[in-house]
Amino acid sequence: MSRNPKLPILDDHFHLDPRGEGTQAVKAFQRAGGTHLIIVHKPYQETPPRTEKEHEDAMRTTLRMAREADEATDVTVHTAVGPHPAELTTNLQAGLTLDEAKEAYRNGLEVARRLIMDHEAIALGEIGRPHYEVPEEVWDASNMLFLEALEIAADADTTAILHTETATPETMETWAGWADEAGLSRQRVVNHFSPPIVDEDKNHGLTPSILASKDSLREALEEGDRFLMETDYMDDPERPGAVLGPKLVPRRTLQFHEAQALSEDAWARIHIQTPQEAYGIDTNT
Ligand SMILES: [Zn+2]
View: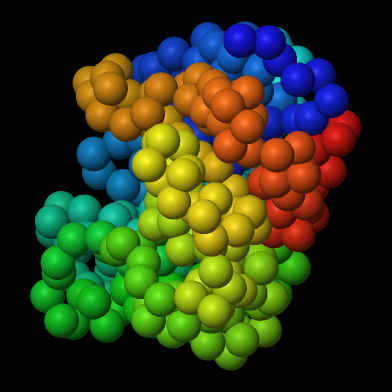
């Protein structure tokens, strides 16, 4: 496959793990034709951070890995930090009360807000709510923290990356309403792991980030081209192949383009205009 040198390729949701491939995975992404990455923070330890200091140490691990990859490759690496929604339930399992777990989560939001205000990261994420079933009181607390996170994103003038249960047009309408309430522009709410819901009547102006599988991409392109592409690469040595590999966004982009299933305009919409609208980043540089 030949690289189209004219246009950039962004993987919108990519994790690095201190025990994983790290920079090597970013090199593989580059060799496949990738040019830009959003590295998203994830929990690295079984017991999630609780104090601000613990959150800051964890998030600085992400910032460090992202900087190392940026320096060691030609890929431009951006970073998102935030307490993962699963941290609330893992802290409960570890014995915290709901109030303590909420406090621990809020500490994470506060540290993320500061790092974003200091321009160390460009987005808040992933935030949202568990994708699995939880007791009603935990669900209510998750929704409250979800809304608080959107308010913090608005306050920090940044983008929120959502981790949630599989989105539907109904839930997207709800989250769009929450974004309005928080004062966060809808396009700055990126729906990670989104089904191919690209029609704006259905996603209500949120920015869908769609898995780079063949079927998802094909379905997405039937509805339009205002979306982002992602692998959700986990870099987890204990779960190799649990998700898509690091090369898939560039591979799929080039493959669809060569098969004339992705025009240059659509390519630019996915990898230049939509990242600009969602994150304020310029992937032409
Ligand atoms: Zn993720």
